[in-house]
Structure formats: C-alpha cells, structure tokens
Length: 293
Image (cartoon, rainbow, N blue to C red; front, side, top):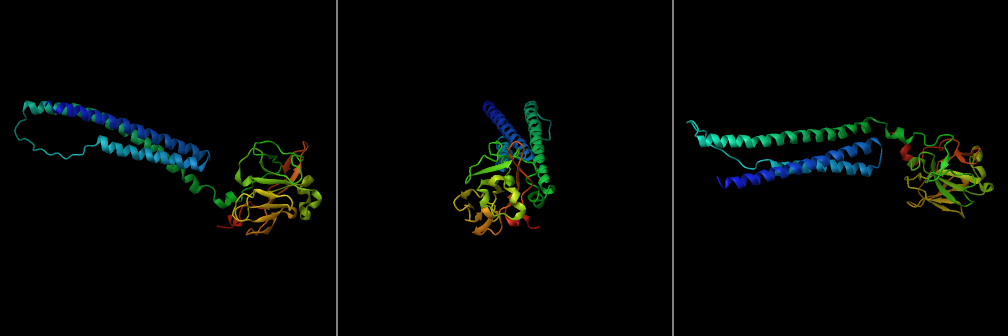
C-alpha cells in the first residue's frame, strides 16, 4: 500500500497536466475558429483566413492527441468476481476508488463542455462556407460594374486627382474613391499631349486635357500593366511582354494580348477633379474571365 500512494499521486499529476494542456489546445482551436469566422465574413485576406483555419484544426487535433495520451487509460485489467461477501479491506478499497473516480467524472464533464464548444465553433465555420457555395457566381462577380459615373479618381493614399496632377508623359495608379485597393478597379492614369491622341470619335471627350485612363489588368492573363514607355506612348505588361498603344486607346501592338485595355471615360468636375463618366468599356481582365460558364 505504501508504494501505491506515490503512484496514485503521480497519476493525479499526470491527469491534471493532461487536463490543462487539453483545455489550452481547445481554447486555441476556438480562438482560431472565431478568427476564421471574422476574416471570412468581413472579406479580409485569404491568407489570414487560411492561417486561422489551420490554427483551429491544429488546436483541435493537438487537444485530442493530448487527451488520448494523458487522460485515457492504456491498460487492460480483469479480475474474478468473488462469490463470497467481500472483506472489509475490499470494501474500503472500493470506496477509495469510487471517491477518486469522482474527480475523473468531473474532468470528463469539463472536457465534454470544452469539446462541445470547440465543435460548435468549428461547425459554424464549416457551415459558413455554404455562403460561398450558394453565393454569387464568379461570372456575376466578374461582370459586376467596377466604376460608377461620378466616382472620383484617388491615389493609393486616398488623395483626389485633379486634371493638372500629372505632367505630360507621367502616369499614376488610381482607384475609385472609397475603394482604394479594389483589384478590379485599379486603373492607370496617363497624361499625354492632347493633340497626339487618336481615339475613336465617340471617345474624344473621355480624355480631358490629355488625361487618359485604362484598366491596369492585362487582357492576356490579368497581370498588372505597370510600366509606361513615354517616348513611344506604350504601356508594357512585365509578365508576357504585351504592349499597348496609349494614343490609340490602348490597342495591343505586340505580345500575346489580343484585346485593348478597357478604357475609363473621364470628365472634370467643378473643383477641377477627375471623375469617372461611367464604367470601363468592357469588364477588366483576361477575356476568358468573361466567357460563359
């Protein structure tokens, strides 16, 4: 009996440690799942959403492993049932085991609630994904309007752009006001000498004082058209070397791109700020984005 007491104390410490580690792992899992729900429903970064989902699943997995290793018995025991009435020693041992078992029952109840809470939050995250399954189709999203008439052009820092902001031969990336960073709305604004423009007749009013704007998404594969060669008035795509002539409405001159960059019509408001006179001439991005599914 003297040797059994230290063994019982050691087992008790082991059980307490397992309890703490399991609860900690489940708490991490719940935090990750709540983070996933927040990121998913607020349409934040996909990388952050994936990281939070990984934390939630990893926490659940670690908790189950610790539970199995520390809190579950790993032995098989069998004993013959005595036919005669048990001795006082056996009855006393039974009472001790029964009282000790109450602590285990208490742990199981706490772990049961923790497991239920974790599964509920993880289940909520899984059910939330139905929003993506039954939400708007990619075709609908890709064809949705990007710019609205009256949207003011602003810099990536949110500053309004006036008709005199750029010098001839210079360029800047602009967005619709209130939607800075909106990928489909990223637009390259270029100022050239107005008398050099050779736009179609219906577009001659779209470039006040030589300010012309085109979608920044290449019509070949969607890469950002980020380079401007001022001497030849060419926009260059660094991914596959497509070039677009700014003076003729961003028509392709070389490379794999077969369509012109969508143009954004512009006008000047009473405060000399540039505003969109409507949406792009066609949906921005590669042509296959707009093909029927």
